[in-house]
Image 1 (cartoon, rainbow, N blue to C red):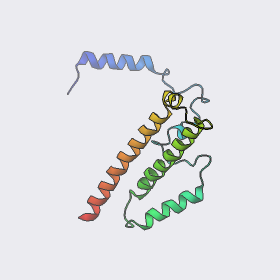
Image 2 (cartoon, helix red, strand yellow; image 1 turned 30 degrees about the vertical axis):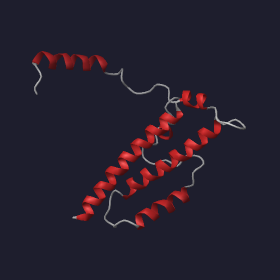
Image 3 (tube, rainbow, N blue to C red; image 1 turned 90 degrees about the vertical axis):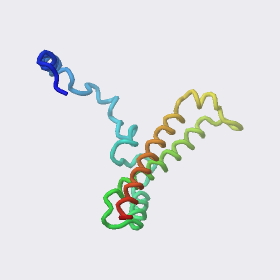
Image 4 (cartoon, one colour; image 1 turned 135 degrees about the horizontal axis):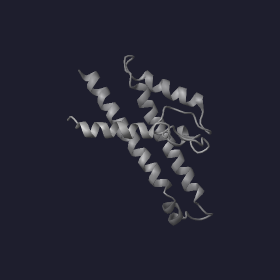
Length: 141
């Protein structure tokens, strides 16, 4: 769909006005840990408390079970590791809201942590399902 000449001129004028204004974050102290915070969608990052060696063994174990030509092996491993990471985070968060005899469920639910972990897990599961489906389709032909 083509745009009108008037719209094209308006777009160009707005583009010129915005130059120099959209240059990214001015204060990197707030964006410094985005790779860790948004690990679910970023490339793989080893975070504190995780072992590079354990990840390498996990990666190799999955790759050994797949055909050598499979490019999605790394992505499948990242999804599985991400799910493992989510389970660990969930248990640590629940433990942080636990008193000596019970869990403060009201505070935990109000915090929103469990909802964010659930969202992360849904994304990872959906991606994993898609990758496995592609893998099966490629290898069944």
